[in-house]
Length: 118
Image: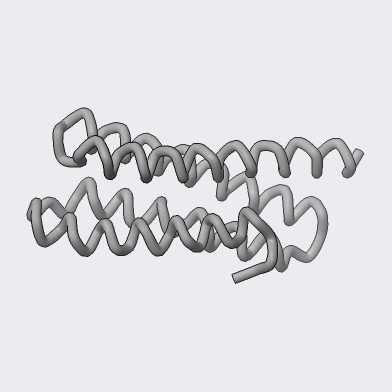
């Protein structure tokens, strides 16, 4: 992906999400909630990639803000799948920790970019 830390981490996270979805959909035969997780979890990195290639600082902030929202939504689906006993604790901890780390990085980048854009 990109040389940026958040770009690399979000791509690695998307790979985990895709692999989790493939395994999950076969083992649990659950497609609705897991598809939501797949969509939002892979969207994070896609929006970060768009941000890296943004046309302006404003566009960069906008794309990363969308990635932030998608990351937060992904955490919602991870929490929901765990609370409804679809995800085991080990998978939950792994996915949630990665998503939370990416979310914190995104919030920091957006905050700094907004401050520097003033």
